[in-house]
Image (cartoon, rainbow, N blue to C red; front, side, top):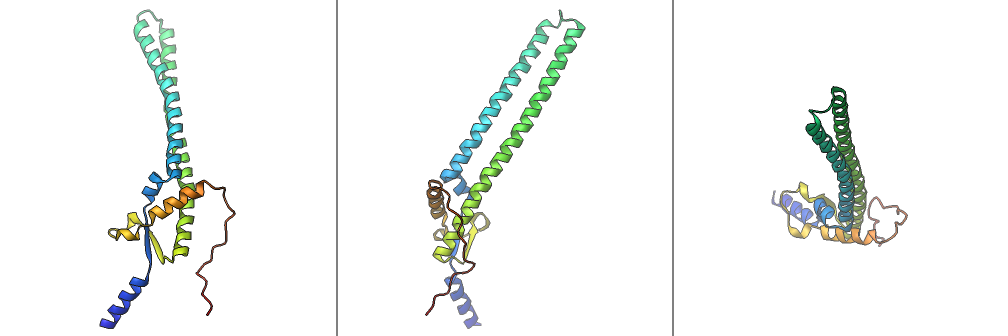
Length: 178
């Protein structure tokens, strides 16, 4: 029983484990910051278009309120139809904007995630990690296991260079010849 415990403890100590904090990578890396800025720029332009329509809607509402006593039934009906059409247009614009922002966010996130996974895989192979976990999945761990800074540094460096052709990754570490 004691021998089994000692052997298990020694095997666990030899197992190199790493942790990566994905939310931190997305918030602190240059790629994550650029993605956030791109999304904010799209959001800002969409909001401007929607605000323009909302202002037009308010203007129609004010016109109807001011002129309600002098407008004919036909003119009043036309203004109400214009108002309702504008409301539908605004709802449609909001839905389209949300869908576009979601799609663009997913695209940018997936592109960064692919790069991060490639970097994590490379670090794992180069530095002999047996396993690397997402830190969000771990309840408690030593700070020394966190390799997020290494990943952020490499991600920032890789974004400044042109894309290289992907290299074939070895499935296992090659065994040294003696």
